[in-house]
Image (cartoon, rainbow, N blue to C red):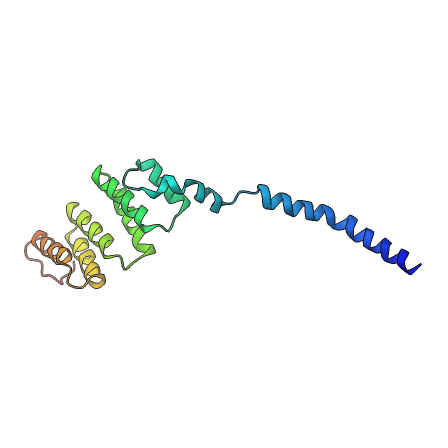
Length: 158
């Protein structure tokens, strides 16, 4: 009698749990995750310099914290004259890594090209904090000072 009760309880547990076990196996086998999609796209996203802009943007959507991709996209926008988009991309990269001196320099060059000498100087100073002694940052500061309107002191604000 005791063994019959044990067998009945065991059979009930088995009847209850086997569908759950099959579901776990099914989900583990067939479910795709965003990580799987990123692995599939990895070969496409490895060589950023040879990729087209839409490909780079797709890669960035898979890896939204990738500063290198943001910088490359910003460079592409800057090269095509889309300064607003380039600035947005550089600022996004700096939001992820505020100590990236190269991105600060790119942003500063872009700002100076667009006539924002004060913004360029601030970006160059941020680059100097990340890369002390950077010749490129010091030159950007000099170029920004040369474009500052006459009669305005270096530290003066309007």
